[in-house]
Length: 148
Image 1 (cartoon, one colour):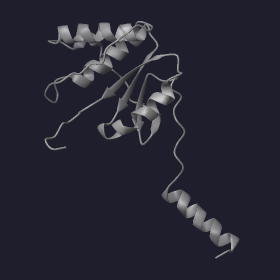
Image 2 (tube, rainbow, N blue to C red; image 1 turned 30 degrees about the vertical axis):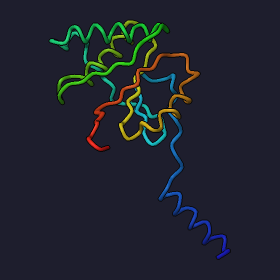
Image 3 (tube, helix red, strand yellow; image 1 turned 90 degrees about the vertical axis):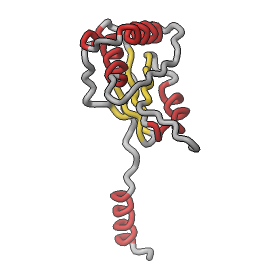
């Protein structure tokens, strides 16, 4: 099987089955990203709600906003765990906070990481380590099943 045409057809078929990974999105260019399959992609549908529309969670909103504002200014910030039932607005609060800070002129971006991608976080950290902007990493729907 050394026929060049046959080898070229096999190579083309393999490329269609397993194309090379898409290049990473520029981590300094977009307001939000999705980390999936070891790659950073622009989150094209990032349209956060205005923070003022989220009501009944004023203490959480204030604490998250101030913590994220410190991060955006380059100061020390803390990891945050938001918990509650589905539909309580946790995701909306994180996205609205990033949108609010961007509206204030802070160069901060959101990176959403799926729970099955947690093991790849060191690769993501290496990718964004030298980028001169703040990132809010958002891991949604973490679950802790018994026996897992």
